Amino acid sequence: MMNNTAKIISGVLIGAAAGLVTGFLTAPDSGKNTRKKIASKSQDLADEAKEELNKKLDAIKDSYNRILEDSANKTINGVKNTEKVLKV
Image (cartoon, rainbow, N blue to C red; front, top):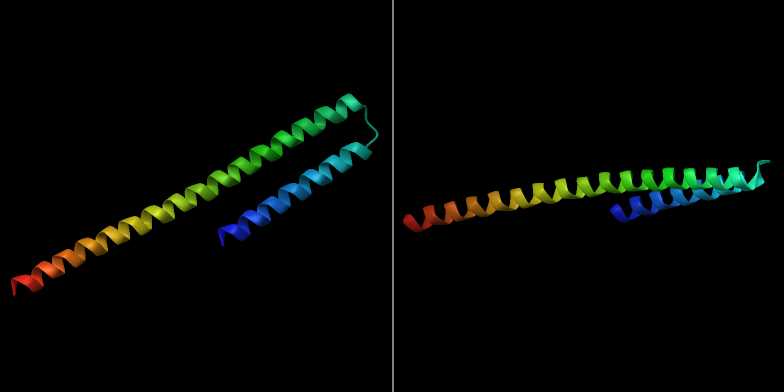
């Protein structure tokens, strides 16, 4: 699932970047202004990508921690049940 999400995000970002570059290069503006716009938009896209990546990483960490805690609780309960059975 994460693989598909990453592909979608990558596709959207690449498409947006290509559209921006095409738009800037065909717009009637000086080369200096065009380069500034491209640099600015590129930085914006990079910031958005980092933000999305951090959100996904946080979600993965949360999921990992829940699974780890659930596994620990099941292990503790299993040990307690085993102790009860052995005492009988």
